Image 1 (cartoon, rainbow, N blue to C red):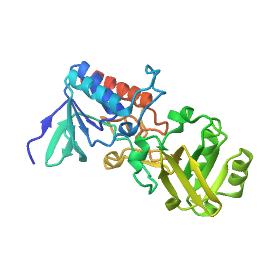
Image 2 (cartoon, rainbow, N blue to C red):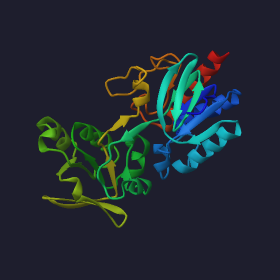
Image 3 (cartoon, one colour):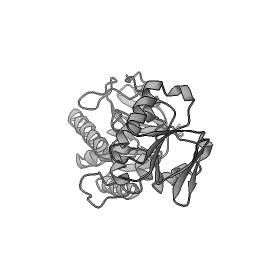
Image 4 (tube, rainbow, N blue to C red):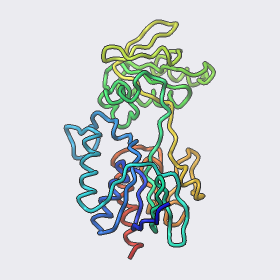
Length: 297
């Protein structure tokens, strides 16, 4: 391996949390390196209408591009690649990127989450087209009174269907799990809310002429949008290797300044808690960056 490079902070993840941290650190006149695997969920979003300051909406790729340009304007260095390890060193951390090691007294983990994707033809393209959606908090307002399905395999999907029911009455839970994964009580609650349950296999869910068709033994239904409610997994492997604590959902536990249980290791964005919102990720990135700046002296 080459000789370690030296930075004030290394940020792992180039989504809204990591890039906001980089913008702040750059403006604090700190040397910051952002390592981006290119997997930010923001890059999939065709148009966000709930991000403050954009009443007409803004696309995820456009927002990411603007944030990258802003971070670079203030001196942040952006590198494409995947971090394979973070280790403790005498004066902070050593971060491994390919055959290279870079050193910094502080690391911000902003690697986000990995969605448990349905085996849906052209899943990412369907998300970018708005046929498949991932976050009803973000965009259920856009499906008001439209035919909507929720793909899931258990109670989590039922809870998401109840949330979306506030926006549309034309709603069904497309249940691709075993029948007993939904209890009688859960099914009764769905029926009382007017949510139909369609029992099918994921192979019965197909894109069709700008909509999504679902075939089952009970017939065929077509939806404008399908929400995937199969859950997600926080990308906490790097932090776990350092002994950082996680909560019952597998997300990193942090202080009010976004520091994990490992001194000098910070976390921001979806890897921290379940309310996966752009504005929250940005705020957490700013908090972590400011605390690091204060500690650098």
